[in-house]
Image (tube, rainbow, N blue to C red; front, side):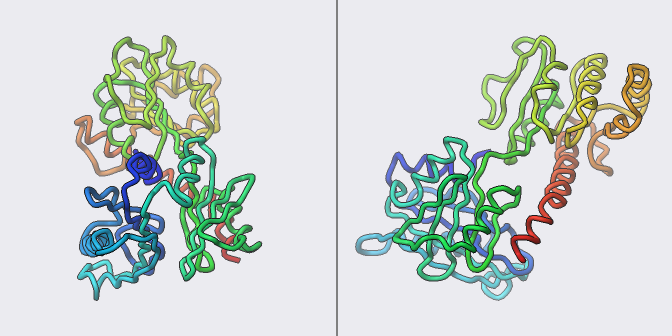
Length: 351
């Protein structure tokens, strides 16, 4: 999955004027979260801030800014939309959208952000939501100011550092939008490049995650895969488990039951995974449990094995139906984990 920083990086080669739309604040129900982005140029729209009348009106405003008579200038402003009254949307919430006209995306803060992203350096982009709309970029070693901004205050700096070290997503604190920009720590390992494995990769690769797709068969992978997918052709797929990061989501769906069992044993033995899912029936699970108990795996670790996989209520067995069900289960577990990890951080930020 591409993100808005990559899209901005593509625009730096054209120096084409653009308007960057950002969901800055949300009160009540809204179609997208704080930090959702969209890029508007004279020729295309990239991304989405939620569709519907809200997006239609914002794109129309941005297009007008790009067509205004006279010279286009760098400009930043906010507009508030009551989704019910202004947009006729049933969400009923209130959304504040940041409009930022960039005469040249190679100016100001954009190249610095793109360079940090390409170095895989975690940063926090800080944007003031009231005039003069100050802008800062914080890394682990420095804090740069842009557009003649004053130095970042100690309280803003402290909040930004909390965002830098947490797994929290974009949020507003004291009229500043804090946006952590970092490599995704949502790691998924999919063992098996058969029909279900391919469908699962297709679904999950649309998310902000990193996928290692592992199989032992030669020439099994497609010639092209999404940018966030790494194909690993391994003579011993089970050995690949040791190289995977902590908090990884393991999805085991190979063509071989003995190989499935070997991978399961290696994955469960690590005890630092987020999820270990095995495709199959309850009888397959019972058989694997007996084998792994004999080989010394504890009942506590075995209890963490998920088999069958996928959310309840979806009975279809077509590859794409299984993939959607499994992806939903993975997202449920990921979101529950992120929420539990971030609650202490958010309490500190808001105190």
